[in-house]
Length: 319
Image 1: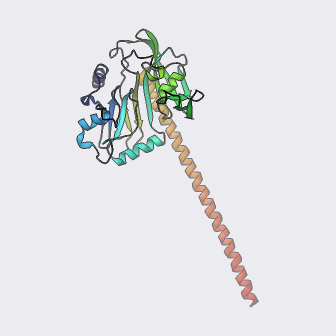
Image 2: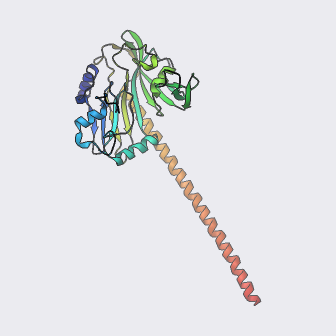
Image 3: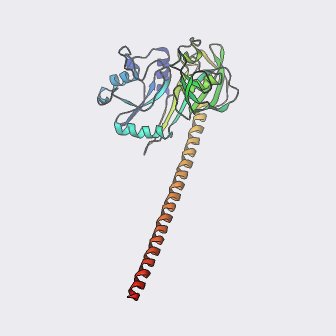
């Protein structure tokens, strides 16, 4: 953990650079990096010199795949202002395996955030459908169903767990762990804003008012991809500590991050176990159904053959 803390301290005080890529995990198939809070994953704009893609090309030129546009296959997305665990596939087969996990929603992601105000309900499910905002001047934003200009809202859920209450730069805030159960654009930011507790430093969803903090306080802390035969489990540490940001002053702790994450993973393992049992049971029932149909067809064919045989015998006897 000491090297993670050191790297986090560096990126909280320094802007992103080509050399500031922090690798959390590396194998023949995947690299997981701790994305900086003020850098895009990739960009087609010539003036975007510092991107995660450029950092990867700088650090691992030999691993870039010339058959892809960006040179590296990003398994998922993080917003420009969001830091934390970001998985990159190093070949097409690995990308396909990860994609299936994301598509089947078997991936577990958990984010740390500091949000404005004191959240009273300590554990809750945020359930707001999210759509694109078509209002003039806000087309880069998302919004919840029922608000003006909300187009094509889709179901969306986030689990919120309160970790600590405290102050950020003198204002009351709550440190929370957020687990997205779906994967919509800006989901966590929109959901937190919808309950009246926007993410600290979220310039976009505060209509430009929250521009004091040096960054948006949203961090992809945990990433678990149930790959076979070896699952990928990576933690990107906790950047929201007084030692790293003195403006954050915890006052009351409800639960530890480690215990909360452990409980989340245990719950996910149990859910996956139940899902696999249900799948096996469905497969068993389907096999039994097919077997019954086959036996029924065999019986029908046997009966038909018996009747035909009797018909031949009677004709033969008549002759």
